[in-house]
Image 1: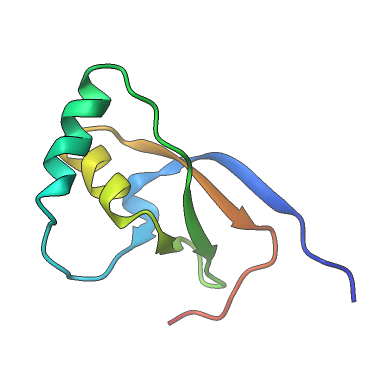
Image 2: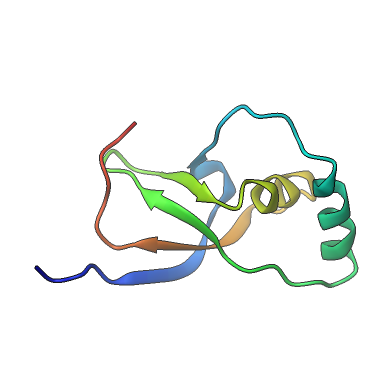
Length: 85
């Protein structure tokens, strides 16, 4: 079976479904780091069959982007969609 291709690109922050866990205080440090020009690695998301994405790794990076008012985030995902949850 052929392995699906991995994609890294900028996606809309609003297209990512997330959980409802509260913010971790370390997110504030991450926001300060990003404000000072620090770069963060791409988040990992699953591509949903019905459209959009679900967060797999990088919830605090996603939240930091949202809190900074950024509308795009670099994300890594498989070209093959996963089942909607």
